[in-house]
Length: 169
Image (spheres, rainbow, N blue to C red):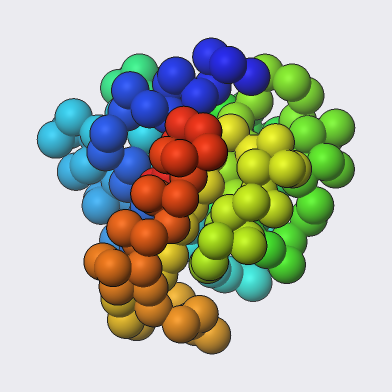
């Protein structure tokens, strides 16, 4: 698991995909990879599992070509099927312990946190990194948690640095 921490900390740019169609998602991910991003999360909210799987397979090919890390948002089954490097789970998604059992020890697991209590929970669950947010309002996510703003981030990150070093994205 230590190697996962190092990997996350070395990759300063983490692209979380966006776009309302499969084509937009793929084009944006490819642009991020061409620009040098080495850490890609596929986040595509669709009810069509076949579309998600097809997109994930294409993203796996692209990330392999660009020697980038590939994380799938929420869908452990899709991550397993396309041999992704890991999964990012929300607070209400599959528990981290269960994800670890399904993926195995060598895969990366990130977890969402919206406040300091969530951050501490994610550390206790042994996530490899924490996706902290939201920083500000966004239309890319429904049911948005209260925004933290820069001062909220600063408070949480300073608290973490006093306790231990932990990758926060």
